[in-house]
Image (cartoon, rainbow over all chains, first blue to last red; front, side, top):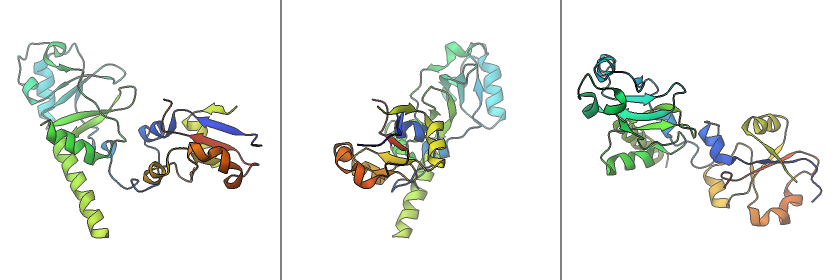
Length: 156
Length: 67
C-alpha cells in the first residue's frame, strides 16, 4: 500500500485503558472502577497475625484489608467477617484466598450491578498483572453510577 | 511488516504526529478510542487506507488486545 512506517500496538486499547490512558468516544466520560476504588485500603502480608491486622484496619476506619505480597500483588481479602476471627491466627489461614478482581477500566456501573447481584460488599481493583490499585466499595460504586446516570439525564 | 510497539511507543509516536488507526468495528470505535485515532475497521483497511491516511506519516494500528 506504500506506507513505509507502520507500527502495530499489539497490546491494544485494553492495555491503554488498563494504564488509565485518556480516551475519546461516547463512554469517555463515564466513571471507571479505577477512578472510584479507594487506594488507601489497608494491606497486610501472609505472615502477619489477624489480631494486629484487624486492629490496624479498624483504627484506620476500615472493616476490610487486602492481603498482598511485596510486589503488591493481591493474594487474598479480609472482609468484616474474617477480621472478626481468631486474633492469633495467621493471615494466610484467615483470609479469603484468590478473590475476584476487576480491572481499573471497567465501567463502575457494570461493577455496581455485579456487587449488588452477588451481594458483595467490595472488590479489589487490580492491574492486569494483579497489583492492587484499590478496593471498590459497593456504596461508592452505586453512588458513582447513580451520579453519572443523573448527570447524563440532566444533559439531555 | 508492521513493527510492534508498546504503550510508551504509541505516546511518543502520537506526539510526533503519527496517525492512529483503530481497526475495531465502527460501533466499538464510537464508544472509545485513543485520542485522535481514526476508524478503519479491519475488513475495510486495505480498501480505504490510501484514501484516509497520509502515506508520508507514520501509522500506528491497534485492536482491542493481542488475542
